[in-house]
Image 1 (cartoon, rainbow, N blue to C red):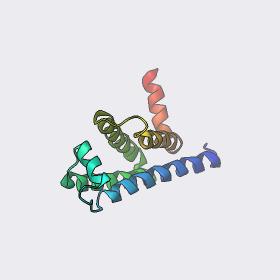
Image 2: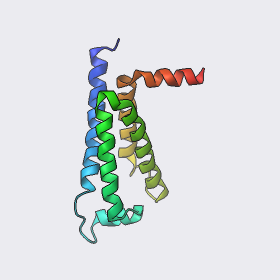
Image 3: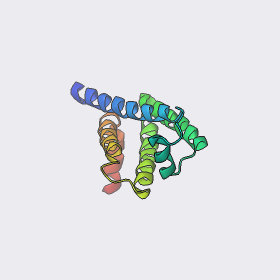
Length: 130
């Protein structure tokens, strides 16, 4: 049986992860001024405007799945994959670990949230290693 404290911590972490990803998703729909820092970063990552909108829709869908308790396990797995891809893209396109720090923090919060909200994930991992 989970304690009330663990439940609160799990939800706080989930809300922080969702807020970070919602912000990132909404920013993908905002117009980018030519020559701005945002446009330079998108060019460095190889993201085009058409791809940007598709990634925003995908990110919104993943956040929705992650926040709904009944689908949170699927949302967690999809978010790990999405964030892993974002981290790999950043690191392979010349960004430093410090520039990718928000992604590392999101991973940590995601793990804490998944451990508390989806204990069956830990159970499955422990069975696989035995």
